[in-house]
Structure formats: structure tokens, C-alpha cells
Length: 181
Image (cartoon, rainbow, N blue to C red):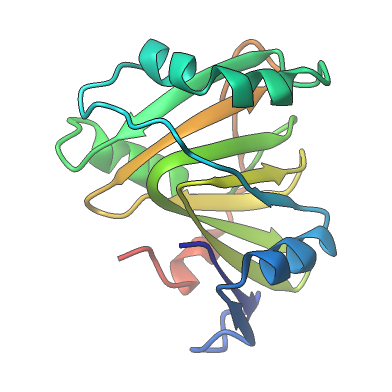
């Protein structure tokens, strides 16, 4: 289930100043801040052992729809499970605030993950689940939490053939906000 919680960036509020599970409200609130959010169908039932190529084939129509603009020519699929041998290292890397020189675009087809966006004086926590399409513009400060027992599959779109390239800010802001678990 999609969820948005907005906190003051100073981390002084234990509770969010705004919280919503309504996809239309989430889309509108994020759009006001330059973030794209949509809800898409996830009709493909993936086998627990599905490899990236199988995931991409199952969602070929959605991928073609995104790539039709020509903005994101590179695509891959990532699947994280509680037994993934590198889950702890990946979690720690993604938990540090960073930016990208390109948009970060994700379509969640299974499970969930928590995007935390540091925009001005706010931190927006977007819990993305199956069917959520999120576009975070280049240069947006953010971090991602997959939880200690990650379980998600996402299709990632890039305009850079190198894929995921981050510039870490060194700001410990992520330490002041709730984690996924």
C-alpha cells in the first residue's frame, strides 16, 4: 500500500506533519514538489525464482510505455529478498543521503520500499508498493530503505547506460528519521 508521510527536515517532529494513504492525494502532494507518482497495474505473477530478464519480459508493455518518450533508454530489474547475500551492504549504501545527475525512476512490481526525499525544509517518506511508479528528478537529495528483511522487485529506468550512479552528500540526516522496520 502506498503511503506518504511528511516531516520537518530538522527531524524535530516525532510524528509526521502530514500523512496519507490516498494515491490521488499522494500524487498531488508529490507533484507540488516536482516528484512524479502514479499507480499502475501489476498483472504479471512472477515466480519466486524469476531472473531479471523474466521480470523485464513480464512487464514489456509498461517498459515500452516509459521508453516511448526516449528519455530512459536503459532499463533493468532488481529483486531483493530476505535471504539475499548482500542485503545488509545494499541497505547501508542506500540509507546514506545522495543525489544523482539523472532522474531516479522506479516501478515497483512486488513488495515495498521506502523512498525518503529531502526537499527544502521537508523530508517526504514515500512507502512504495506493488503498482507504484515514482520519478525523482535529478539532483534531489534522497535515501532509500529496503528494511532489514527486504522483499521487493522493481524495474529501474535510466538515461545513463552506466545505471545507478550516486553522489553521496555526507549529511547524516537519514539517521533522524524512521526506517522501514
